[in-house]
Figure (cartoon, rainbow, N blue to C red):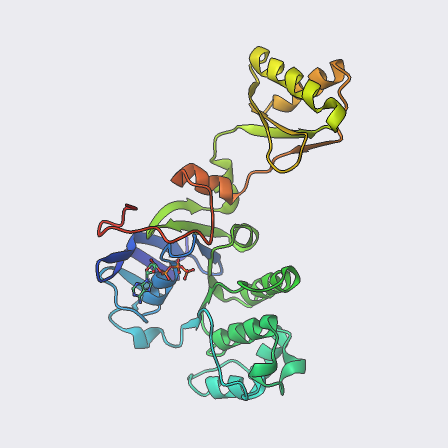
Length: 328
Ligand SMILES: Nc1ncnc2c1ncn2[C@@H]1O[C@H](COP(=O)(O)OP(=O)(O)OP(=O)(O)O)[C@@H](O)[C@H]1O
């Protein structure tokens, strides 16, 4: 395997009594989109800011292409491009001006024209920052992270506040940037974003890594319970529930039957990977024709639930940390 581009080992960072990052380790390989995923306050931004040498670590080491970012932050200045949350620029500065200004800070900057093209900003070159839409501002912030021609780009909460279409086009841009050879460290609290974009990721909760792997590998590593959801109209719902409850008592592939909140008449039947083979004949035999049948696809949210015991709520109130980094 190639030498890692980023290597974080036992990283620890406190703010007074608060342990924001507690013994975090991971490595990022060249050309990867590597995710740092977790709810608000989990310690993601602190991790990447410390990794970039912008904050002082209390323990552990971080190297970027072999350079220790704590001991020698200047050595990584040209190697690492950082797009952090809520970049604010003067309202009157234009897209073209700000890119040229930032390009002047680096020894071998990217071509601003090429960057504008890459990020679909060419037609907005003369637009003032204050007049850009949310999506355009995000694209400019990615361009600014790339203007130094870095080997590694850190993108932090890129799509927060964007509408679904702008999110999807931002995802395509991130893939376009990776295709140029830049390794990407993507910080996000969106599970779907991590699942869609990341080759590998760490899930961070209360300052600690609680899961690590590829999105598919993490999901496949869950137990092999499967769920089928069937929906019935008001006339059949009661009879269907009774039939499925009986099935759960009789059939070893069916473990649980629950009515789902929200949509009346929706019944979830969980069991082994063969649960579907039990449900369909039982319903057919009783002539119960569902209005809808779907199987539940498992996601990183199920991984989070499995490793933390909590439902994933990205905006959940911050966990209280004790000095040991344990939720009190
Ligand atoms: N400068 C600071 N002083 C004190 N506490 C801080 C500081 N910055 C962050 N924290 C705390 O450290 C913890 C981790 O914060 P951090 O911003 O790294 O989390 P995050 O996962 O990036 O969340 P978010 O997505 O909300 O930024 C939080 O409890 C936060 O309140």
